Length: 278
Ligand code: HPA
View 1: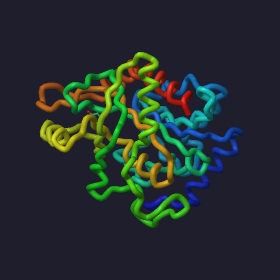
View 2 (view 1 turned 180 degrees about the vertical axis):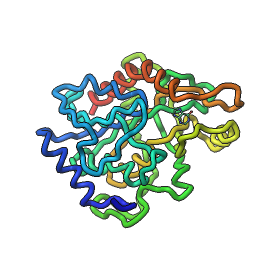
View 3 (view 1 turned 45 degrees about the vertical axis):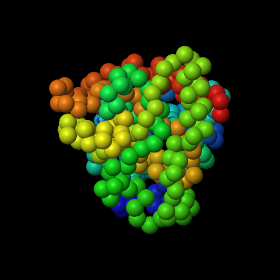
């Protein structure tokens, strides 16, 4: 496997999945740290461990199960990735986004992407959902973009537009889904860093200054590849911890996973409500 993803590598993974499913998925979903249990409510589920799929980037992180769950949710055919791989695990950034390419080749034209994130906005508290309205591609600004390398013309153009990374109509549907369930939510800008070290207080104050409301180590590369391939995207952060802008508290992966337990029921309500409106 080279540095850049090829159509051949993508299709090897696609064939392995197609051989095991009968349905045509419409919505791809990626569940972030501690959020995997959301997939337990999927009906008629076919489960494929991702280590059985060629070229798949395997997640090594606790809280990431490493399974594809394909089935029906609210009458919609979904293909759900429980447990993503991250750039900090050592994969090239293109490989991190292979699952999104595979979803596209399988016919998914919509992506629901979730993550656990630290709250930079001082009003946000752990256990809240944040609808992602826009993002800051900080690792991209550092030159690490999943579209680097030969353009895959089959999917999209060399210079894809990024004026609407998160679909405005999907955002409205998600707002209504929350309102219908009497569930409060936040909205904001997600900043993506490579990790795995959490941010220093000065970095967090910098992020606040440039307009970030939440920070994490994923999602943006996947969204860029999704938009390149013409998918419409809904992005949701589960606020798992308060980022520590003054250095007075510490951040741990354990607290991120713990917040997942509060977040999963809320996320399930939001996503079911959203899917029901599709
Ligand atoms: N920083 C970066 N990534 C994260 C955080 C955080 O505070 N919480 C969950 N993912």
